[in-house]
Length: 267
Image (spheres, one colour):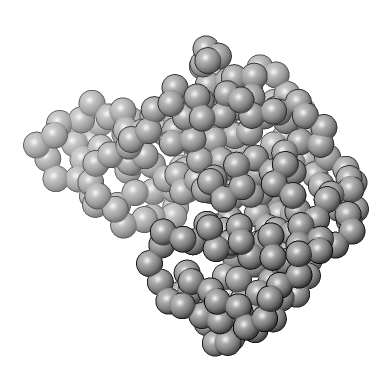
């Protein structure tokens, strides 16, 4: 695995947003080395770059949200549609599509071990849907399966080789609203962090970032040396932060200390 190189220049700016939480362990857990190991094989230099979807899969709407078991009213087609030109974040490419039957099989496998309700699919439709990725929102051809209760469940209508670990990645809950500056060497974002220590001392949160060939890992946690025998406020605050990286971000993915990807707004 690549060594993790720390980013030295870190700027923290407090915001006023407050979150109810436990009194200790803001951003606790996670290991930057383990997080980095999850992404060491990410083909950051591939063209086109793999799509990293961070939405829950499948995408469910309306009354279909409780469903995890789906039966078919009619047999789905095994014939895939023709390839389609799609505007990715790196430019336009032709993507190979999959059949409705293939998408339904992948959707069913994704939900197989989850508890939930059984519903019947009454219609399959090829749509164009928005998906959140680690490079922001992306419009992709998708199969939508309408249920007998209303609402639908959807799956990307694109072959799996266009993605990185489709259905296995989850968006970070520790870091949000990440933007890249025009030089592509400075990342600004929001993070959930500790309030000031209860005894009035300074500090209370800690931020580190490490760089790999394939990823930038941002680690947040508590670093206060305050007394542990005082009663502190039981809330966390949202802070703004900026980290500078020594090379342009390029195709690298930005992840938190758990290895969860963070959507980045590109300039």
